[in-house]
Image (tube, rainbow, N blue to C red; front, side, top):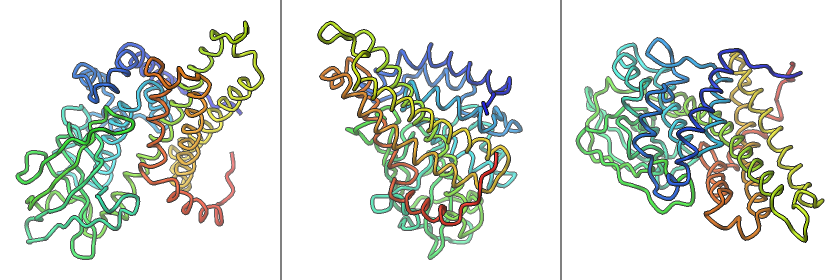
Length: 381
C-alpha cells in the first residue's frame, strides 16, 4: 500500500525543499570547512519557524505531526548533517520540556524556544558516561531551595550557541533533569574542535562549577531524570537521526547516479558496468527499506502506539548502519575523486559515521532490539 502524505505534510516537505535549495545546499560545504553555522542561515531557520516546527502550537510551535517532521528532517539531512544535528538537539530537549515541564516552566521557556529566539541543548554525555547515561557523575547537591551542580558534559550538540541547557545530574543515588540558563554563574561552554564529521554542529564541552540552580528549574520529579526525561528526549533524537540517515542515503544515491552517468571508463559510462549497477541497486534498496521503517515509526507515533519507541529504535539502527555502508560505497564508486573535498561524498561518509554512535550506540541498540524481538507483538497494517 502506498503511503500518501496529507496536504499539510506535503506542504511541509515542499517548504523544506525550498529551504534546502536556497539556503542550506549552497552553504553545506562551507559549514563543513569552517566548522560553524553562518548567521544568515540561522536567521533563515528562525524566520521559517524550523526550530519550533514540531513543537506545540500553543507555545508558538508549528505543531507538525511525526510524518511531516520526518520528511522535513529527511530533506535537511540530505543537504547538511550539521544543520540537521542542530535541529535534532534543539527539538529533543524542547520536547522533553514540553512533556515534563510545569505550566510555569513551559510559559517561561517554550515560546522563545519555539521561535528560535533561544536555542536549547541536551546535556547528558560525560567523559566517562556515554550511552550508559545512568553512569553520569555530575552532582546536584540539594540545599532545599537550590541545587549546586558540579560536573562536566561533553559532545554537546549546539552547546556553543545554546542559551539554555537541559542538564542531567545525580542527586545522591537518584537522577534529576535541570534546566540551566547559559548566563548562570559557574557555567562555561568550551568548543570541541577537530572532529571527523558534523563539523558545523557547534559541539561543546560544558563545565559546571558549583552552579546554583533553583529547585523550580528541575524538570520532573527527583529520580525521573534518566528513566523518563532523558529517555523521552532520546526517543525524539533517534527518530530525527533515523530520518536524517535516510537523507544521507538519498544524497549518496543522487551523487552516484549523476557521477556514474557522466564518468566514462574505456569509452563507456560507469553506469553501464555490472558491478556499478549492483552498487546502485543496493543503495536504492537501502534507501527504500530505511525510509519504510521511518514511515512506519512515524505512523505508530501519530497513533500513540506503545510500540513506537522500539520501532523508532529499529528504524534508527537500520538507517544509521545503511547510511554508513552506502556512504562508504559512494566514496568507492567515485574512485580517487571520492577522496577529494571537490566531491561531497567524502563529507557524507564522515557525517554518517557518527549516526551509529549518537543517541545510543549500535551495540546498545542491538541489546535492546534483541530483547524486543523476543516479545515483539505482531504489527498489523
